[in-house]
Length: 346
Image (cartoon, rainbow, N blue to C red; front, side, top):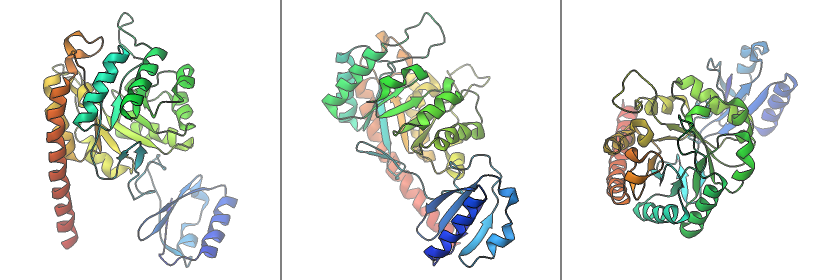
């Protein structure tokens, strides 16, 4: 249930309403906007008299919410959530580029790539230390040593690091990681989601290979319900009957999620396609659709990469693409503003 308060709501009246709701075992989440304060009620709201609440002097409107996700719901939180990581602010209308190798191979490699992507405009460094692989015989990552190499790259460049957590036992090693990534295979690992929900750092949650939007948002809800509201959603392609690409990039996820949730949205065109030649057009499509950021794989020698070389860009190619993406983002933002103004005029 959502309770929309009038702009002139008095504090003592609000406190009285909150005390009454708490006495009914209802949890209340407040969202203060430019014009209204919205109370999101979580619990057995079927026992509440909606007409009684609507009749209160401080209440402008009351609505029941059918969606099972509450904290991630835009109806509960109309203003977009902005997640701050270092100098990057994801969700504030800017375009954030997260770039780096699929897998950390050496300190020299990741430091060199970090310097290159930062020079090109990236504000966060991605890199895998623990790697989930389909084959047990494939390279599984350097583990703790890989995390140390990522920290060395951060020390050299100042770029915050984003890396994937695969298992609860690895969590103690992630104390100095800036953003914890939950991969597609773990999107519904609920114990893991609750654990990262108890951390005080942002979580980048990738969409599962066959997950619906609601299932994806319910996974975000697990994290948020555990206390961590710094969640970033990442569209990375889904499994379909098409075999020409590694996955099928769901471009419609971006505008649909924009309507459903206040959480920031990024896209991973590298995993979505599995082919470096498709990264640029998919990245540009995502920017045109209104994405908040992109996670792109960059490697200085893709032909000899230990993991996902075919979908990685060389640093100079990434630099050229980044320039185009920033220009496109400016144009897309201007067009979006024009569309909003036209809508308001009507």
